[in-house]
Image (cartoon, rainbow, N blue to C red):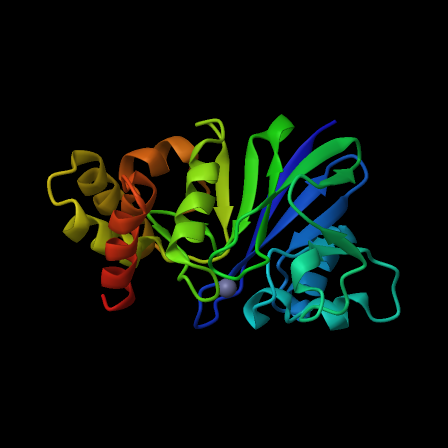
Amino acid sequence: MTFKIHCIDVKNALQNYIWLLEHESSHDVIAVDPTEADLVEQYCQEHQLNLTQIWLTHWHKDHIGGVPALIAGRNIPVYGPRDELSKIPFITHPLADEGHVEFHGLNIDIIAVPGHTLGHIVYFIDALDVLFCGDTLFAMGCGRVFEGTHQQMFSSLTSLAALPPRTKVYCTHEYTLSNAQFALQAEPHNKAIQERFEHVEAQRMLGQCTLPSTIELELETNPFIRAENTAEFQRLREMKDNF
Ligand SMILES: [Zn+2]
Protein backbone atom coordinates (compact mmCIF):
# COMPACT_ATOMS: atom_id res chain seq x y z
CA MET A 1 0.00 0.00 0.00
CA THR A 2 1.92 2.98 -1.22
CA PHE A 3 0.89 6.56 -1.59
CA LYS A 4 2.46 9.54 -3.29
CA ILE A 5 1.87 13.27 -2.97
CA HIS A 6 1.81 15.50 -6.05
CA CYS A 7 2.02 19.27 -6.04
CA ILE A 8 0.21 21.57 -8.45
CA ASP A 9 1.66 25.07 -8.35
CA VAL A 10 -1.28 27.32 -9.20
CA LYS A 11 1.01 30.30 -9.87
CA ASN A 12 -1.72 32.74 -8.86
CA ALA A 13 -1.31 35.96 -6.91
CA LEU A 14 -1.94 34.11 -3.62
CA GLN A 15 0.68 31.46 -4.46
CA ASN A 16 -1.62 28.50 -3.87
CA TYR A 17 -0.61 24.89 -4.10
CA ILE A 18 -3.10 22.11 -4.76
CA TRP A 19 -1.91 18.86 -3.19
CA LEU A 20 -2.94 15.53 -4.65
CA LEU A 21 -2.63 12.32 -2.63
CA GLU A 22 -2.33 9.30 -4.92
CA HIS A 23 -2.93 5.65 -4.12
CA GLU A 24 -0.26 4.36 -6.46
CA SER A 25 -1.59 0.97 -7.50
CA SER A 26 -5.01 2.30 -8.53
CA HIS A 27 -3.92 5.84 -9.52
CA ASP A 28 -6.87 7.17 -7.53
CA VAL A 29 -6.24 10.63 -6.13
CA ILE A 30 -7.65 13.06 -3.65
CA ALA A 31 -7.38 16.79 -4.34
CA VAL A 32 -6.91 19.04 -1.33
CA ASP A 33 -8.38 22.57 -1.59
CA PRO A 34 -8.61 22.60 -5.41
CA THR A 35 -8.87 26.30 -6.15
CA GLU A 36 -8.82 25.81 -9.93
CA ALA A 37 -10.59 22.96 -11.71
CA ASP A 38 -8.74 23.20 -15.04
CA LEU A 39 -5.32 22.71 -13.48
CA VAL A 40 -6.50 19.61 -11.62
CA GLU A 41 -8.20 18.12 -14.71
CA GLN A 42 -5.14 18.76 -16.83
CA TYR A 43 -2.71 17.36 -14.27
CA CYS A 44 -4.83 14.21 -13.79
CA GLN A 45 -5.02 13.67 -17.54
CA GLU A 46 -1.30 14.10 -18.04
CA HIS A 47 -0.44 11.72 -15.21
CA GLN A 48 -3.35 9.31 -15.75
CA LEU A 49 -4.85 9.86 -12.32
CA ASN A 50 -8.50 9.39 -11.34
CA LEU A 51 -9.91 12.07 -9.08
CA THR A 52 -12.00 10.16 -6.54
CA GLN A 53 -12.29 12.49 -3.51
CA ILE A 54 -11.99 16.18 -2.66
CA TRP A 55 -10.93 17.41 0.78
CA LEU A 56 -11.57 20.99 1.87
CA THR A 57 -10.08 22.75 4.88
CA HIS A 58 -12.22 25.91 4.97
CA TRP A 59 -14.62 28.02 2.94
CA HIS A 60 -12.31 30.66 1.43
CA LYS A 61 -12.69 31.00 -2.34
CA ASP A 62 -9.03 30.27 -3.05
CA HIS A 63 -9.56 26.82 -1.49
CA ILE A 64 -12.94 25.75 -2.85
CA GLY A 65 -13.12 27.65 -6.17
CA GLY A 66 -12.59 24.67 -8.47
CA VAL A 67 -14.98 22.27 -6.75
CA PRO A 68 -18.27 22.97 -8.62
CA ALA A 69 -16.60 22.37 -12.00
CA LEU A 70 -14.73 19.29 -10.77
CA ILE A 71 -17.85 17.54 -9.47
CA ALA A 72 -20.25 18.60 -12.26
CA GLY A 73 -21.81 15.47 -13.75
CA ARG A 74 -19.62 13.18 -11.64
CA ASN A 75 -20.05 11.39 -8.39
CA ILE A 76 -17.06 12.66 -6.40
CA PRO A 77 -17.47 12.89 -2.64
CA VAL A 78 -16.53 16.25 -1.17
CA TYR A 79 -15.29 16.26 2.43
CA GLY A 80 -15.20 19.51 4.35
CA PRO A 81 -15.96 21.28 7.60
CA ARG A 82 -19.45 20.65 8.98
CA ASP A 83 -19.41 24.06 10.61
CA GLU A 84 -19.02 25.77 7.22
CA LEU A 85 -21.76 23.86 5.38
CA SER A 86 -23.76 27.05 4.89
CA LYS A 87 -20.81 28.53 2.99
CA ILE A 88 -19.80 25.33 1.16
CA PRO A 89 -23.14 23.79 0.14
CA PHE A 90 -21.52 21.16 -2.11
CA ILE A 91 -19.93 19.26 0.80
CA THR A 92 -21.31 15.70 0.71
CA HIS A 93 -19.43 14.43 3.79
CA PRO A 94 -19.37 17.01 6.61
CA LEU A 95 -16.53 16.56 9.10
CA ALA A 96 -15.98 17.74 12.65
CA ASP A 97 -13.23 17.39 15.25
CA GLU A 98 -12.17 13.77 15.80
CA GLY A 99 -13.88 12.71 12.57
CA HIS A 100 -12.32 10.26 10.13
CA VAL A 101 -11.95 9.78 6.41
CA GLU A 102 -10.87 6.58 4.69
CA PHE A 103 -8.95 6.26 1.44
CA HIS A 104 -7.77 2.85 0.20
CA GLY A 105 -7.29 1.51 3.71
CA LEU A 106 -5.68 4.67 4.97
CA ASN A 107 -7.17 6.33 8.04
CA ILE A 108 -7.22 10.12 8.11
CA ASP A 109 -7.93 11.96 11.36
CA ILE A 110 -9.75 15.28 11.38
CA ILE A 111 -8.65 17.98 13.80
CA ALA A 112 -10.69 21.17 14.23
CA VAL A 113 -8.48 24.27 14.25
CA PRO A 114 -10.68 27.37 14.62
CA GLY A 115 -9.06 30.78 14.22
CA HIS A 116 -8.40 31.61 10.57
CA THR A 117 -12.05 30.67 10.01
CA LEU A 118 -14.34 29.28 12.69
CA GLY A 119 -14.87 25.90 11.05
CA HIS A 120 -11.34 25.27 9.70
CA ILE A 121 -10.29 21.61 9.83
CA VAL A 122 -7.04 19.82 9.00
CA TYR A 123 -6.36 16.29 7.73
CA PHE A 124 -3.76 14.27 9.62
CA ILE A 125 -2.53 10.91 8.27
CA ASP A 126 -0.58 9.21 11.03
CA ALA A 127 0.47 6.23 8.85
CA LEU A 128 2.14 8.56 6.31
CA ASP A 129 3.29 11.29 8.74
CA VAL A 130 1.36 13.81 6.67
CA LEU A 131 -0.67 16.87 7.62
CA PHE A 132 -2.75 18.91 5.18
CA CYS A 133 -3.33 22.07 7.16
CA GLY A 134 -4.83 24.68 4.81
CA ASP A 135 -4.32 28.19 6.13
CA THR A 136 -3.72 27.42 9.81
CA LEU A 137 -0.03 26.57 10.05
CA PHE A 138 2.35 27.90 7.39
CA ALA A 139 6.05 27.28 7.04
CA MET A 140 7.52 29.79 9.53
CA GLY A 141 4.13 31.46 9.89
CA CYS A 142 0.41 31.01 10.38
CA GLY A 143 -2.84 32.17 8.84
CA ARG A 144 -4.45 35.45 9.72
CA VAL A 145 -7.03 35.39 12.49
CA PHE A 146 -10.13 36.37 10.50
CA GLU A 147 -13.05 34.78 12.33
CA GLY A 148 -11.90 33.29 15.60
CA THR A 149 -10.08 34.80 18.56
CA HIS A 150 -6.32 34.87 19.05
CA GLN A 151 -6.89 32.46 21.93
CA GLN A 152 -8.57 29.98 19.55
CA MET A 153 -5.89 30.32 16.90
CA PHE A 154 -3.07 29.89 19.41
CA SER A 155 -4.73 26.83 20.86
CA SER A 156 -5.21 25.40 17.34
CA LEU A 157 -1.52 25.92 16.55
CA THR A 158 -0.58 24.35 19.86
CA SER A 159 -2.55 21.23 19.00
CA LEU A 160 -0.72 20.95 15.64
CA ALA A 161 2.63 21.54 17.34
CA ALA A 162 1.91 18.48 19.50
CA LEU A 163 1.76 16.12 16.49
CA PRO A 164 4.78 13.85 15.97
CA PRO A 165 7.83 15.99 15.07
CA ARG A 166 8.44 13.95 11.89
CA THR A 167 5.01 14.95 10.52
CA LYS A 168 5.33 16.58 7.09
CA VAL A 169 3.38 19.81 6.88
CA TYR A 170 1.60 20.57 3.59
CA CYS A 171 0.12 24.05 3.77
CA THR A 172 -1.79 25.73 0.96
CA HIS A 173 0.41 28.74 0.19
CA GLU A 174 4.02 29.49 -0.71
CA TYR A 175 4.45 32.20 1.89
CA THR A 176 7.68 30.88 3.38
CA LEU A 177 10.06 33.62 2.27
CA SER A 178 8.00 36.52 3.58
CA ASN A 179 7.32 34.52 6.76
CA ALA A 180 11.07 33.93 7.11
CA GLN A 181 11.74 37.66 6.80
CA PHE A 182 9.28 38.32 9.58
CA ALA A 183 10.66 35.47 11.72
CA LEU A 184 14.15 36.97 11.47
CA GLN A 185 12.81 40.23 12.81
CA ALA A 186 10.80 38.52 15.56
CA GLU A 187 13.75 36.38 16.73
CA PRO A 188 16.95 38.04 15.49
CA HIS A 189 19.21 35.77 17.56
CA ASN A 190 17.66 32.45 16.49
CA LYS A 191 20.34 30.59 14.49
CA ALA A 192 17.89 28.05 13.08
CA ILE A 193 15.76 30.86 11.66
CA GLN A 194 18.81 32.51 10.07
CA GLU A 195 19.85 29.26 8.43
CA ARG A 196 16.38 28.46 7.20
CA PHE A 197 15.95 31.99 5.85
CA GLU A 198 19.08 31.59 3.71
CA HIS A 199 17.96 28.19 2.49
CA VAL A 200 14.45 29.40 1.62
CA GLU A 201 15.81 32.48 -0.13
CA ALA A 202 18.03 30.29 -2.32
CA GLN A 203 15.13 27.92 -3.06
CA ARG A 204 12.84 30.77 -4.10
CA MET A 205 15.52 32.31 -6.34
CA LEU A 206 15.38 29.02 -8.24
CA GLY A 207 11.58 29.01 -8.21
CA GLN A 208 11.48 25.90 -6.02
CA CYS A 209 8.66 24.93 -3.68
CA THR A 210 9.69 25.26 -0.02
CA LEU A 211 7.14 22.71 1.18
CA PRO A 212 6.49 20.41 2.87
CA SER A 213 7.87 21.56 6.17
CA THR A 214 7.91 19.37 9.27
CA ILE A 215 6.57 19.93 12.76
CA GLU A 216 10.13 19.59 14.05
CA LEU A 217 11.38 22.39 11.81
CA GLU A 218 8.44 24.60 12.73
CA LEU A 219 9.12 24.09 16.44
CA GLU A 220 12.60 25.51 15.82
CA THR A 221 11.82 28.30 13.36
CA ASN A 222 8.17 29.39 13.57
CA PRO A 223 7.72 32.30 16.01
CA PHE A 224 3.96 31.75 16.17
CA ILE A 225 4.11 28.21 17.53
CA ARG A 226 7.13 29.15 19.63
CA ALA A 227 5.12 31.87 21.39
CA GLU A 228 4.79 31.11 25.08
CA ASN A 229 1.24 32.27 25.54
CA THR A 230 -1.74 33.84 23.80
CA ALA A 231 -0.62 37.39 24.56
CA GLU A 232 2.74 36.83 22.90
CA PHE A 233 1.07 35.09 19.97
CA GLN A 234 -1.35 38.00 19.55
CA ARG A 235 1.46 40.56 19.66
CA LEU A 236 3.33 38.65 16.91
CA ARG A 237 0.22 38.13 14.78
CA GLU A 238 -0.67 41.82 14.93
CA MET A 239 2.92 42.79 14.05
CA LYS A 240 2.83 40.39 11.09
CA ASP A 241 -0.53 41.77 9.91
CA ASN A 242 1.25 45.10 9.40
CA PHE A 243 4.59 43.70 8.25
ZN1 LIG B 1 -8.02 31.11 4.00
